[in-house]
Amino acid sequence: MSTADTERAYDQRHVHSHHHPEGEAHGTFKGYMTGFILSVILTTIPFWLVMGDVLPSKQATVFIIMGFAVVQILVHMIYFLHMNTSSEGGWNMLALIFTLVLVVITLAGSLWVMFNMNDNMMPVSAHEMRNAP
Image: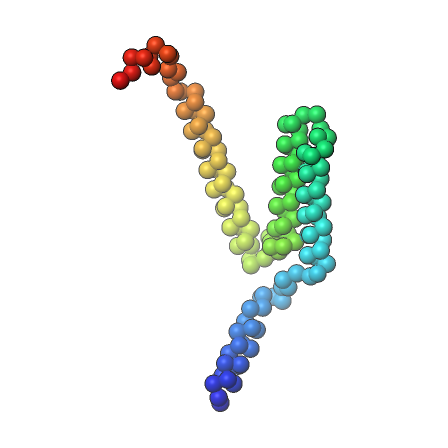
C-alpha cells in the first residue's frame, strides 16, 4: 500500500468520524433561511423604532429593543447553533445556563458594589479640598 493510499484511507476515516451521533444533521437550507429572515426582521424593527422616533418614551424604546435582542439571541441559538435540550446529551444547555448564571452574578455584583460605593462615599466640600495636602 502506497503512502497516497494510506493518506486517502485516513482522510476517508477522518471525514466519516465528524458525523454527529444519532444521525443529527447540521441544519437544512430551509432552517438557515428561516433563521436569516427572522434575524433580518428582528434587526430591522428596532432600527426603524430608533431612526423613525416612533415611540414618545425613550425608556419604552430601550425596553422594546432589549426584548427584540433577547428574541434574536434565541433565534441564533436555535437556527444557527442548533442548541436544544437534547443536543449532546443536554451538555450544551447546561453550559449555557452556567454561563448565564455567571454573567448575572458578575453584573449584579458589580452594580451592587458601584451603588454601595456611591451611597457610602462621603462628599467632599470645597472647604475640605482647600485644607487637603
